[in-house]
Amino acid sequence: MKKQRSVLTTIAFVLAFLLLFIQGILAVFRYWFQLEFNNPLLFYGINVGIVCLATLAIAPYINRRILFVLSGILLVLQGFAMYVGAGTRSIASESPDDTHLFMVQAQPNGQLTYRRDLYYQIPQLQRFLPVPSLTTAPYSLSANGGGLNYPLGDDYKIDWVDDYAIFSYETPDGGLAQYVRDYDDNGQQTSEDWIPQIINNWTGSDATLAAQGLPYDLRLSKETVALNPDYLDVTGKAGSFTDEQGNALGTLILSEDGNQVIYVPANPRQKTTYTMTTVNKD
Image 1 (cartoon, one colour):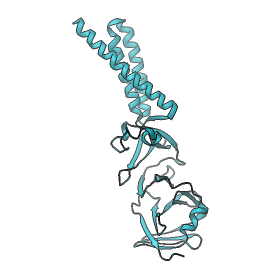
Image 2 (tube, helix red, strand yellow):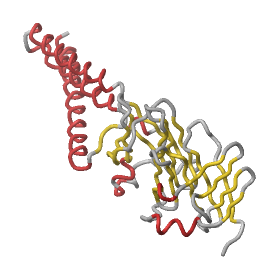
Image 3 (cartoon, helix red, strand yellow):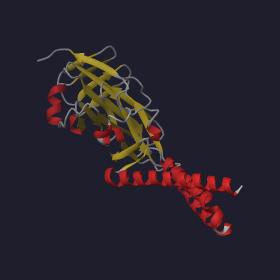
Image 4 (cartoon, helix red, strand yellow):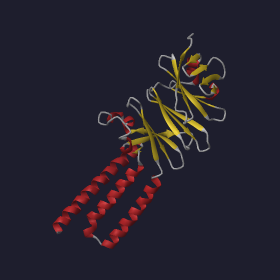
């Protein structure tokens, strides 16, 4: 019986040490690369495993009452941390060709942070890691890619146009916001670079865009939208428009050859994207 107990305590000690070693590696990643679990509950879950296994490992050698009091305190603290972290959720989407993964993390108060997966954060590891996907994302590490300007409300959607991810969402006050991520690294452009490429007449089966006067006149099947380049933010070949109050209207994305433009409405309840081609090219 004592021999079996010794074997079990040894196994528990080894497992606790391995988990502690893993946490040490994660601490290094966090310090040097600002990487954390996409799901923060995994971090706390590993800590709970360390406490439980360490308790089993040292139980035969110290006063049981002291042991269980200390273990209980540690588990209560971890439980509280897990409860607080449980309100954090990840919102993710894969590109249609499965080559890119877009992900933001939403805090309980609605604050949003773009998360950059370990695969992209440390390119030297790409030969050893799978391409990020919805399957692996919950168990992977990611870095803070910067906070979004507005918190998340009740509804959102994620559209993909070529290598662009467009995250459209409601804000708590009922406004609309958009965040665009360019995975093709088209370089930094300014509105002065982008606007000359859009000045034209464009038409599609259910949308037309007259972009030769101010504001640009976008006519959709059920509404007309005035797009003012004074309220424009450019990401690569994508131009996101807002109104005077800062509410997002939508994003226009130019094709590589410049002969096509795709409009993504900012309203998350509008699931349709609109494709238009040039009427004439000067």
